[in-house]
Structure formats: C-alpha cells, structure tokens
Length: 285
Ligand code: ADP
Ligand code: MG
Ligand code: MG
Image 1 (cartoon, protein in one colour):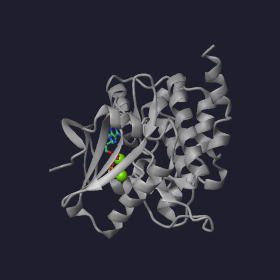
Image 2 (cartoon, rainbow, N blue to C red):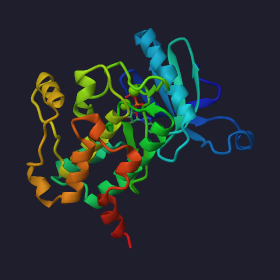
Image 3 (cartoon, rainbow, N blue to C red):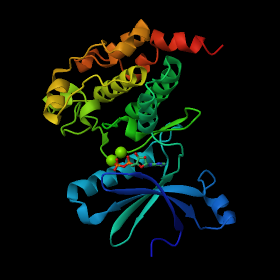
Image 4 (cartoon, rainbow, N blue to C red):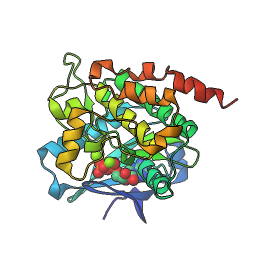
C-alpha cells in the first residue's frame, strides 16, 4: 500500500534522476483538511525516490532537500508539505504546479525557430532573481539552477524546484566544497576549484538569460569533454545570429552575471536594479 492519506493518479509530472514525480490526491476529508492545512491544496505533487539506488550521500541530499524546502517560504519557490516512506521509496509531498518546465517551453520555441521576447525573458529573470535573492539571504545556495528545475505556466508564473543539491552555508565558511551542477549552466569556478560560493547561482541565471533571448547555448560542444573544457575557460560571445535583435542592455546584464571572476558578478538584489529591467518595466504602462 502506498499511503493512507494520498491516492496516486496515473499522471506523471516528470522524471528525475532517482525516480518519478506524480500527481496525487489528498484523501483527508475537506473539513479536516481545511482546518489543519488551510494553505495546502488538495491535489499535490509527490516525488518518489527509490531507496535501492541510494547511498548514504544521496540520502543526506534528500534529507537536506526536505529541510531546505521546508525553511523557504516564497511565491517563486515550490512549497514542501511533508514526507513519508515505505520499504522501497522515500516520498516527498509538495505543492503541485502545472504547466511544465522552462526547458519544455524553450525546446518548443527553438523547434519553431523562435526565442522568448526580451519582455517575457525579463518577467522570468526577475522572478528567478527574486527567488534566488531570498535563498541567498537565507544562506541557501541552489547550485543546480537550469530550465529543467524551473516550473512555469502560460501566465509566466514560476516556481523553482529541485533543491536536492542545495547547500545551507555554514556561517563561518565562505565557500562550498563539492562539485555539483549541470555542465551547461555550471559556473567555471565550480569546475576549476573546489571553492565557490553563492555567485555560482548568478552565473546560472546569466546562462538562462543568454539561452532565453538567443535560443543558443553559450558553450556549444559536441562532447562532454569539449563542453567541460569550454565552460572551464568561461569564454563565450554574442555572435549567434539571433543576438542581432537583442538589446545592448540585455547583453550587458548577461556579461555581468556571466563574469568569469565570481567577485565581478552582481548579487541578486543588485542585478535586479540593472537598467534592462527598467526599460522592460516601462513597456508595461
Ligand atoms: P530530480 O532531482 O531527479 O531532477 P526534480 O525535483 O527536478 O527531480 O523533478 C523532476 C521533474 O518532475 C521536474 O523536472 C518537473 O518536470 C517535475 N516536477 C517536479 N516537481 C514538480 C511539482 N511540484 N509540480 C509539477 N511538476 C514537478
Ligand atoms: Mg531536477
Ligand atoms: Mg535533484
């Protein structure tokens, strides 16, 4: 038996490295449910992680994911409700957010030879920076920001997920010491040294902005070895043809967030003050 409290639907929301994320329904009666969990919805997302393939390190990651999600209360970060386990799996119950990932949206646009407008990219990057500013203020570094870990709907409402690799920074330590992340969005210092800090999330948001407005990856490569070598050097340019119609302010913000030296990158709250946001906000009125 899976759970007395939740009933799994057949709908699969996504596939993770270690299991599936499915849609489930809370069986607790509306009356009780309203009293005890006013802000929890009745339909939830459950991430099932198979225990069989986990080593101690991974179990530590999962526990830290739950702890971190539980601490963070922000409109652009997925809410964690609870967890439970059976003999075979650990289950993480969280807020359901439908609409798919930013990755799926990007692929659809690229297939149609289109890109996000700067206006839409601005709405997305602004929310990402606000959520990451909030994480950093709470001493949490996401460390795995990429389009697959960003949920987004038609109205461009957005939630960051997958805090499995996140780290709560020890107040006395300025840096982290494990190499993690996804090659295309990972910061050079993470690959080069074992010392890096919050600035790696800003780099990843820079890469996301690069891809949103151009439809190209800043580090194109035919193999993993080539990709890692390119990211390590951190050299990229704006020569992709689609950059012809990208504003100079947008490229300026990308260059700042994708500064090779972490210390040269703006912190999230500073990045939000960049001129590019002001130009796009003016378009609303
Ligand atoms: P992993 O750590 O294995 O990458 P994720 O937490 O990123 O697992 O989840 C895998 C996929 O499941 C995501 O890319 C997304 O498509 C989907 N997903 C995860 N959480 C939710 C959620 N709360 N609501 C809707 N879809 C989700
Ligand atoms: Mg993921
Ligand atoms: Mg993960």
